[in-house]
Length: 178
Image (cartoon, rainbow, N blue to C red):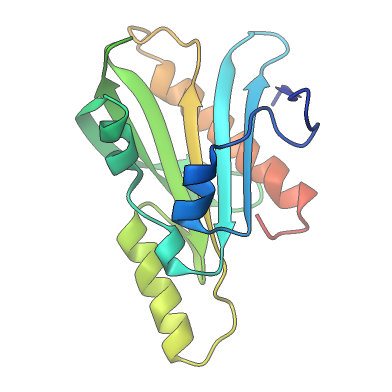
């Protein structure tokens, strides 16, 4: 998968989200890291947000738009993983002030598995709560390639490979939690 760049403040993350993000989402954890592939030097920004409140999770397309990106296309793909099977992931193509056709991807994990959109996660958390279950944790994963050529016809494939490797590594490092 590659190595992660650490911040000078903390080796557990590459950068810290701003206080507004913590206040708005009220998660019990956010980790933001930049991963760089050792051979290809491809860089990926990966953010993981964990919370027990469905209110912590919102459609990330709102944030993309607020940051000046216009979504030109979106689609769901099934990303192959070695430890989690096929995981539904939403890919988004965006145009913005710095680039055209920039890709981003997101996926959620909650009661019952992985979800390609916010509504399915929230429904799963609601059903779990109504059934008296105690598996109310949710996780949001967001991925943005940092230096892939937006005109490369293989950029979506490269992003999907990274996501599969990331999910497998997170699963192993967290004893199945992430």
